[in-house]
Length: 93
Image 1 (spheres, rainbow, N blue to C red):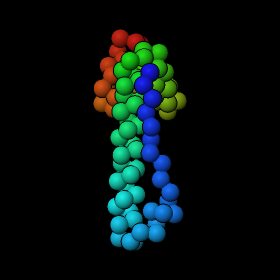
Image 2: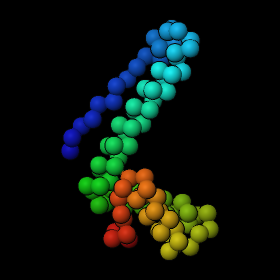
Image 3: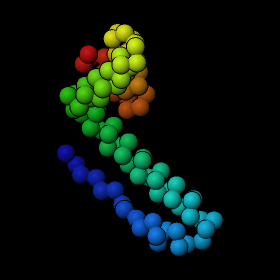
Image 4: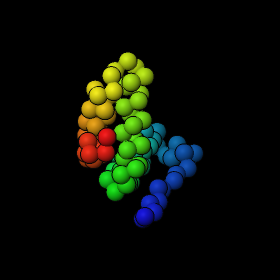
């Protein structure tokens, strides 16, 4: 498994810059970090069936806890997995 490094930053240093640039740079850094995290999650979920099934099951059970039946919950979780991570989990359930 390939390791990914997420660049850290010092918020004090960031805030000492021009105030009008602070939020722009903070959002830009967070956007890059989120994009990197989504890339790592998508790759791992795409490669590891048990990891993908764990996500699928947790999402589905959250729906069941809210009163949705199991079939609908699994279908909804499957749609989420496909939209968010590009992983079809219908073969795992």
